[in-house]
Image 1 (cartoon, helix red, strand yellow):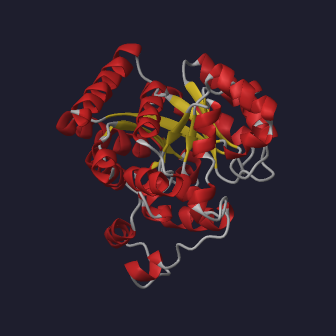
Image 2 (cartoon, rainbow, N blue to C red):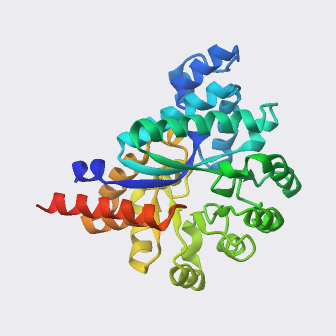
Length: 336
């Protein structure tokens, strides 16, 4: 089963590129940019990765990204993640990034996007891994700031596949961002939003009805509302689940409690992802391996998760079918 999972073709649709900043690279970039850290060593930093809820993680997350200052920094960060992803048999990934967190530090949007997109292009040329970029708004900041970011991003909109909404969910509903999401859709972008991780099912409803999202990031708490579950099943709205993230942030106490298997059985279109892998102890294959063991997932369920990931990607129908064909060939080869 481990070999099957490690070689299973898959897509990753819920990954914050700043959340892939490993402590070793963080220290390298801090040294390169003359940025002082309050941690004495990599081990000292890694020992701080003990979180009791989302906000505790976010405080350290925003502190860590202060080392990202130049185009080369963003290139190195993205290239390192894509190298890891392709070794996990990821054929396609859609990366979220937080422009407001960088603009607030005086790092221009063009600098961030150029570095990330440069690494994406090199990874596709060298390894054949395709990728898209999602511009994410910080929900704990006023919606007017998100609208201002959209104005700044206008010359770069062809670099993005979608907009997203992340950061602290508790007490920050999606509804205030309806206007900027309308602007994004008018510009031809798709839409995703974090909802139902710490927030109630009502936040998922708001994301669906007012933001008109194509995917829900997380969505665990949707199970509390049977009418919402029926809506998600009927419309086959993908949920991008992140089990190791849920464990580290105390959304669940044990992986055996994770709702993924129940969601599959209900007919929900769920996918498996790593969220912020440097902070949560695992990349996408780690999530597959640990959850498969905890929930006793079988081969058919794992194949369904991989199939869902490709079908939920923001890509052409031709490209999606090519990935599905490759998955089918893998299935046949493993059965022989």
